[in-house]
Each structure stands twice: as C-alpha cells, then as structure tokens.
Image (cartoon, rainbow, N blue to C red; front, side):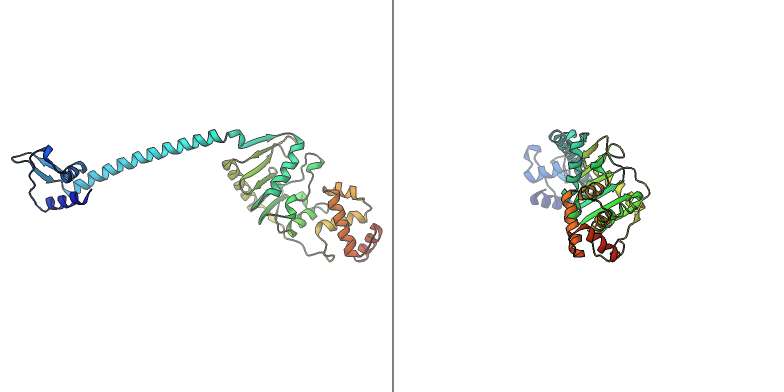
Length: 302
C-alpha cells in the first residue's frame, strides 16, 4: 500500500467523509484501498468511500498473503522437482554405482580409494580373502594417512602373524578396534565414495558407489559397529625401537626366509621388504642376515 493510500485510510477510520461521484471518479489512492480490501464504496446520494474495519481488513490481507505463500510453495516444490529431474538426467543412476567383477580392476580400486582419502578413511577388514592379492596386509594409506583413519578388524587378526598390521596402523595414527565378527569388508573415503564386496571375501566382485544415500547409510552402519567393537590400544614400545612391520620382517629373516618369501607372507612388495631389511641391518649394525639373526637373539629382540 502506498503512503497516500495509507494516509487516506487513516483519515477514513477517524471519520473523514469522502464522497465519490462514481467508480470511474475514484482516485489512485482510493482504488488501491478498495483493491486491498481496506475500503468500499457505499451506495447513496452521494456515494461514499467508507473504511473496512481494521480487523476485517487485516484478516483479508492475511488470507491473501496465505494464498500467495501457498502458491509460492507450490512453485518452489515444482522447481525442486524439476532440478532433481535435471540432475537425474545429467547424472544417470548407473554412474552412482558400478559392479566390478574383473579381478584385475578390484585391487587397484581398493588401493586407490584408500590412498585417495584426504579427510577420513573408514574401513572394516577381515582375513577372508579373494586370492593372494587380497590377503591381510597393511592399508596402502599407512604412509600418508588422512587425519581421521578408523579401522575395525576381526578378532582373527590377534595372532602373532597379523598383530603387526594392527600395531603398524596404530603407530601411524590410525584408530583400531576389534570385533568378534563383522558382516562384511567395507571402505568409505571422505564420506563420498564406498566400496562393498559382493561376498565375504570379495571374490564375486565389488560395488563401487558414490550415492550420497547409500554412503550415508554405510557410514551409520560403520558407526554402529565401531561403537560395539573393543578398543585396541598400542602395546608398549619394543626395546628395539623398530616399527611393527620391521619386527615381523626380522622374525622371518631370522627364520631363514628370503626377501621373496617375506614379501609373499606379509603381502607387500619386494622393495618394501628390502627397505625394511636395510633398516634392521642399520639398527643392529650388521651386514648379513646371519649376523642380524645372531644379534637380534643376543639382544632378545626375537
């Protein structure tokens, strides 16, 4: 309502007589009052412009505003539906989830998701494997883990052959918990990309998904399992000062294993094994495997 129309309405309410020659003779302010429901023309001789009671006028305005708001809501809902449809057309559903059964693609995808996590990596791991390439091993994110790195392991990792994986994860800042059993393996990177095996071991293939709905549900599943699992505190530092993996290599080296055998049994590359052996030799100040075994036994490191 304009200031002129508001001023006219105030004068009408206070009793001012406002004659009109007819509908065609109404000025702009009077027309606005009538259109807004604040005034009406009362027939007579002469016709008069009279105010509508403020309460009735306000009710009329509120009803009109409610109708407009309802129309705006309908328009907004239609716009949202159109945007969703456009998104579906621009991002087909099949691009949000992919089933991968080619074994040659699975391991690079598993490693890529873990290494690519920048803020958070959530994982569930078990000893169930789909071949030697998927046997229990440290996460490839261990060299440069994200700020939040949580892993739930099954209790069968609590063996002399596998605890070094747990200890190594903790030593690099990862949070570890143990569960008696777990429903499946799982990887979630930055709450935006998840990898789910089609069976316990992943031998049947995996599903890679970026669906926000699916990933959100998997995060809730992980959080529930995490709350139920038992914390795995880091053990006391070994007197050697060696990392958990180096200690595992030292034990195998002292048992007569060659680099290739150590790599196969710990599921890492030959290069990683040789780097570990070099660290062990330097720490023991020796140059041969035999000498390393002798010195480690003397110092009661093994």
